[in-house]
Length: 223
Image (tube, rainbow, N blue to C red):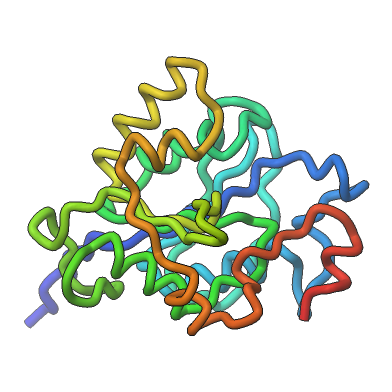
């Protein structure tokens, strides 16, 4: 008797890694800079792959796809920004349209640390009561929040953050049509839930999740 064909399992949580910047201040491609046995981008992709069902790496419209780390536990594919160096908001439509996952977590390709506990705190804040872990149902009845972001000193931090895909995509398209390029109006429009600093600091006391690489000295300061 032949085995029954396997039915693909739809992803419930996707990761979007923003990798379409130009590295102006670094002097070369900062995402390709060596870090912990691979590259900065390798580390960023590996970190988000630990907490999602698939990873989408958003690159520039004309950029050559960079090499990716081997042996990741989830599928990884590239999507292209619709605007060259248009910023993180402009990178979102193509990525959000390229996944069927109802929930996404968005991180920066130049931020190599995404502690698992911090990612889970974002997903938990987004989903409402009960844990939102990859592989569990995340539906509209599990909380009303459509976005969640980290709070530091009373202000939302741009990255990483979590979104409910469908409502977020509608708002992103509207904001871009209005000429917006910043992420904060997206958080405001979606009524983002804040993950308090004391909550995410329990998982990341040194605040590594917020440390990105803009200049070579930033890379030298990372553990």
